Structure formats: structure tokens, C-alpha cells
Image 1: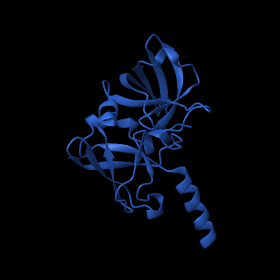
Image 2: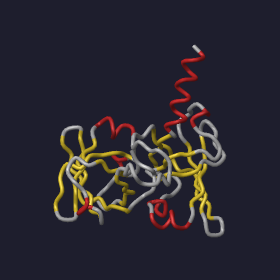
Image 3: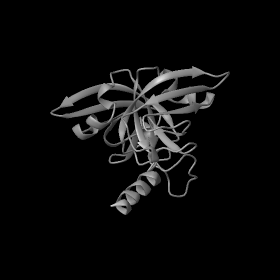
Length: 197
């Protein structure tokens, strides 16, 4: 379980293919605090640490993960948002994030607004109840507030701190992003589907 509050950024140092799997070697400032078998969110995708060496560690993405996320587009030198699993005794500063990406979306517009930024995203048509105005969405691992949602688009506002300390500063129109909808909304939606039958 994560919160969507990014701890630090990591750099992809190496990419190794093995069958359908991809092993990513990541360099980060928190590597020395990691342990084998630990869960770390990479651009919103929960991956398990399988090896550690000096200031780098290795995680593996299987085909299912590659099919549903944008991880397969990463190249050596790419920067990723990192967050370790939340502590049970810590404040929940973002919202409940599982690290289980629902789908990818595409950034369609970036607008600067006198010190902040608005990003607009499109995604495959989905039930509108998954997003509500002022509700929560996780974009590339970042917990954000939804603005102007529909069943195919939504926007988010980014403050300067988030812009500087996450990969949003590198995000441009046309870039693919990982989306995780609010787990509470997903459960309510599932219950309502069962109720309507």
C-alpha cells in the first residue's frame, strides 16, 4: 500500500530482457535503505526488489505488468517516480494507492498558469463513476486531485513543489502515463454493478 506521495526520483541504469520479463536496474538515493523482497512503486507500479548492489537495485516486470503500464517504454537514462510502501504508523498524506495500475492514459495538454501547471489526460472510455470532481487519481504514482472529469478525460493541477520533485517536469503532450483509480470508487462501482443485476 502506498500514498502517492513521491519520496525521490530514480534513474534507469540498465534494462535486461529475459523471456517476456524485463529487469530494470534503478539508481536512487534510497537504495541503501532497501531490502530484497521490498515493494517499491515505480511511476505508480508496485515492483519487488530482487537484487541490490551499491547504489542500484533491480526490479522485474512481467508481461502482465508491461501490457497494462507504460514501463515497457522506459529507456536507459529515464527518470522514474519512487515511493516505498507506507508505514502503518505514518500519516496518510495522499490517498490509498495500491500500486496496481488500471490502465494507461495520454497527456493531451500542458498549460502553465502563473506558477502552477494544468495537465489534461485522455484515457479509454470508462464508467464516469470512477472519477469524481475533487476526487483522487494516481498518475505515474503521484496522488492528485481530479478536475473536470468525464468518462474519457480529466485534468489535474500541479503545484511548483510537485512539478520540481516528480517526473511531471518532464511530462509533455503525447506522453503515456500510468493511471490508478481510487480503490474506494472502484469497490463502490463494483457493488453498484452487482446491485443493478
